Figure 1: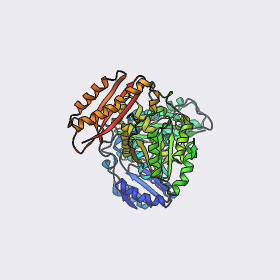
Figure 2 (figure 1 turned 30 degrees about the vertical axis):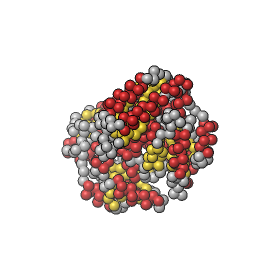
Figure 3 (figure 1 turned 120 degrees about the vertical axis):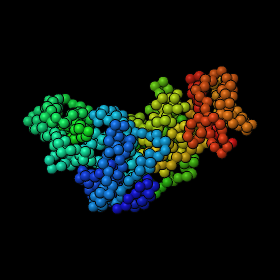
Figure 4 (figure 1 turned 135 degrees about the vertical axis):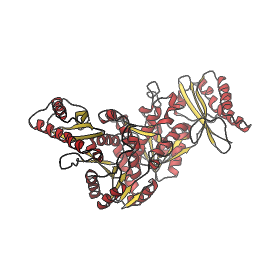
Length: 283
Length: 283
């Protein structure tokens, strides 16, 4: 496993491999890796000749009042985990390497960057799409792997790729959960013992929605109302949003129809920590 | 010479050639080709194995009150001219092919898209950078060739390529002029006989600046004032701007210094026609 810290270093390595027609896969991360990330790396490794993982806590996707500075980092541990997965290249650029002097260029997937997460985190998706496009241009992978945990992010990146004709295939893999159902997240480390308990409100909400669906409920507003009622039982939880959207258009819907797919999207704050979760709904 | 009208058709052709390690060059145009365009095609052809030219009057770079609908088009003539230059592929997509349903993604080179041309044509450069990035992703050329006639456009595209790590080299070639000095432009066809005469104000302004420079004038404001005075002698001309900027930063300057390069940038309206011109100033 080779660690590259500059764009030119990584490019030189990959150029040779690309000329040998190696299939190159790519997993962009912000580090502090957990089993969710590692499931993406395993898929990437199993479906390519060369697996590249990036670790970059991207400043442009954090708002001024968000957790950029305290976002957890542990490079040594990350490198050991990636070595265990037989990852081929780890790209760990500095902010200066990624955003040199007088950086000016940003990518926007307009409509979809304003809603849901975009409403609560203005500018977030602009930072995400910009850094992901930069990383795609640096790595030029055959495919890149993202987690369903950030469902709107995966949707927006696929939309960017389609709109801008980016020659990269996008793969989205299922959420990996802790034993009790909490979705894996680097931010879970922020939670104290009581917050960690109440964070189960998210998984319990998903299970409640699935129960209602099984019992025949098709009205999305009623499912959302029941989830909001459930959340009230967790006094530390403050809801940002609970929504059900069409999986292919990310637009809110009234009725859940047969043979279509939907996302139940959840975003809450628990103390100073903001957590998101989601599941695919289908009948 | 092969004409492709769909993205997949062109991609399939180029994929095979790329695997054969052919050097691919690209000249994006809006068609209605003149000697300026053809000089770019000749350079592209002479420095690559495969030369791709696109013809696409890009709707997103025209303002609501601009000349998108009446922009001159002559596909048959363009194809003959490109055949004569032994161009290999001509890509002529429809607007639907480039901007399918629910198009959302735009690229912005923020600071530099607001000034000069950007001030007089809001949204113009967003349309330019977006379509150029799309075309780069479709063609994936080794290098792309642009004309210095649109100096700010070339600067902004180079900035986008640097910022987003786009793996394409940018070449900028000199302005080609008519015998009397008018810069070649597809829009020159809009001019009536009297407007065509007065359009020489642009080239005469460039010559005046060069004369002042040769005589030792180093103050950019004084050169600009003299040009504006000269333009007053052409009653049909309305000035949008006359500016001198550093060639490397596109920022306005006070004094012309030795061993540095500058652009004298001119934008005027003559009747309903808007023309731009420029020259590199150096002492």
